[in-house]
Image (tube, rainbow, N blue to C red; front, top):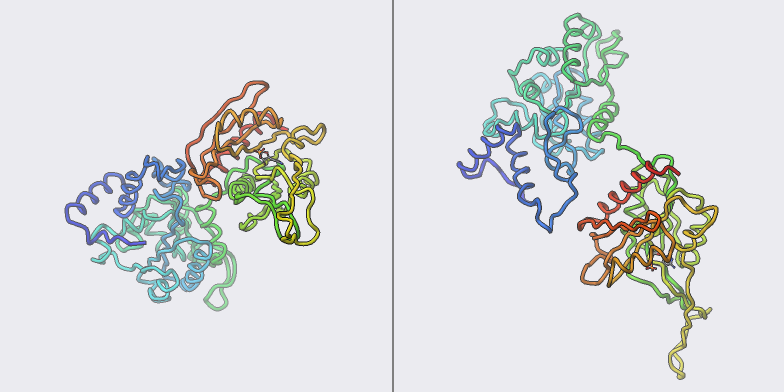
Length: 478
Ligand code: C5P
């Protein structure tokens, strides 16, 4: 990926960017991202789910407010204050990075007595910032950029002095200027001698900061660096701070399918001809796997029964691998009862009746005759069950012509509740591809409604389907 140096842009463009970013309360870098985002919005090749284009909202301090590129790695500006606990901040950089969080460090003057900017930049893999009046970064008000071009500001260690400056609104160095200019959540990890922590001035400052919406992790009780001293004032451990930061950056998602059992079939089936040959189809299993992952993320207990695919098992999902349609049906029946069943597998309609026990040989008599018999229809079988029928049964209709009419007929014939219909003509690139254009057919008695969704990635289709299921589950609890 090419990187863009804003400093090297044309003066007129820079002036425009400065004005526009100041007006919108964003850093210049962030403004450029927003402009690029606006530029591609609405273009068919970049049609994205609305969540991908979240712009900063009215309450920028809200922890859920994300930068314009909300799908990217979350970003932390880590301010390292001047205290003996600063050495733990180096470990914190590693802990944040192993959680796939981007870190940019700022060191106060005092912090540099304990750790070096070189160590911080080597660990963060980013330039480290130390100076408010750095011509390199201040051409576009770098302290504003550091304050805003992130999702969270972490101060570790937050010294008594830094807390006092924050409470008073000082801005005489880079760290305090960033904190004053911040419109992102701030998380402090205080660290100081217990007497300093308990001092009335620090108590007042901590209370002011908490009232201002600043969050804190620690300090913990324990031994101090000073020999023989103990009490409350030890900085929280790096792992604790990283977890607290992660709770801000990745707040727990709603789990609308918690307590629901969901069964999903995915992928093709392989129907043996002889020990080495089989009949198959082009299904990749991607859509079914994406639905399994989305249902799991929504809190469901998911069983995925998959034909042969080249995909890794989704985390937190019980996966049963099968080959043939008959094995798939058997696994489905064993997995019952469930609340919701989604049949996304491209099950072979026929299998070879006279499967060879040995590899079939070429003979002078010509091609061996292959007799085909119909496979069990798993979707129809489960839809027609009397006692163990899942509360919601969803089938897929992959068609190459008359999509909606064929899907409506399938809904009636198979006896399921919903059908997700998609056109799999080779020109669509859906079979094996990463995107899908689907129509959701839902049945309420004899009434069938058709909801046509725009082209989306298979993950987005999965998320949208799971959201619809969650709404239905709330309306009609099983
Ligand atoms: O292949 P067909 O178009 O009939 O597939 C429609 C739906 O039926 C899909 O949801 C598919 O998973 C399911 N099906 C099945 N068992 C079969 C054939 C199809 O469960 N033998």
